[in-house]
Length: 224
Image (cartoon, rainbow, N blue to C red; front, side, top):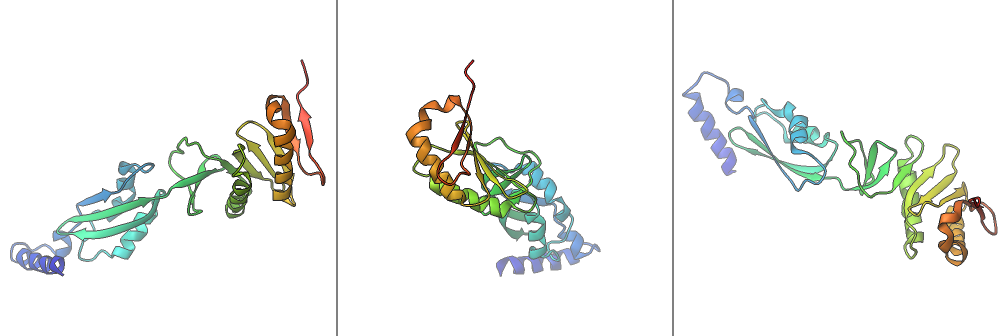
């Protein structure tokens, strides 16, 4: 209320000093951006929000301004307030990346696909799949991670092929084919074999096929 009263007083004062319209008096000259940035770059955010410059604080809608702010790729949510006479203050909350989606995108912890100007190098799993399958692949990644929670195995890449088959490459370099069905059961079967027979011979393995009903097939490197 105090801010509104102050704005009205400014309008009244300015009306006696100039023939310009109120829109000119209160044109946005500065966008003040705040937030704890790990991935977003403030200069990029200023460029993304630049269409708000020159608009009048009197006439600009906070909801319309929010649409502009949220269109920036790293912005998950934001709070906007008018600071009279000529400033728009924006508090930005970033997305937190959870995994890579393909080679040019990221998936956030809220399952939103992000397409940044520059893809940061982060120690995250790479997820691959057909277009529009990010939700399915992310859900499977969550289930796989639960199965692996009490093992030393960690996923480097998880891939859903166009025909529906799944495969995993672990950070130790072992690739496991899981097929289309009973993915978690097959993964658990691989883990059992890995713990009992394979963990000490990783450097000798080329790949593992876990699509068999009662075991796995191991591809071994040829001895030179």
